[in-house]
Length: 135
Image (cartoon, rainbow, N blue to C red; front, top):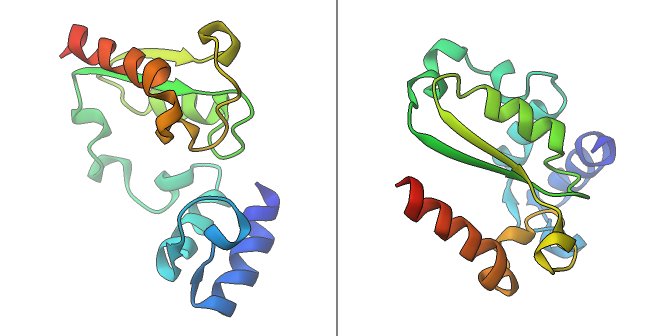
């Protein structure tokens, strides 16, 4: 993530007037101000809480069921960072799962992999079952 926060965003964003994530095979392109905001958050130990007052955010007001997933080899959302984010929902009934792809009979998921249609019969179905039983 050091490379992302300190080299890629600050170098490429001014060159293109947006962050050209697609050009470098990462994810969708980001508008310039969004990339810079994400960079600020990423450089701070409290991430988004560095820019906002916790009391102004709605974490504490969410008191329903919450499924929180993380995946191995995800450089953007490591297990520890997902654990940290889940803990901000102080009144939620959290079910925290660190998904091991091999246990589901699937390949590496990687960053943003959950959203790929090839996981519709595994990850999406698992999530749908959770929603139906906790909705």
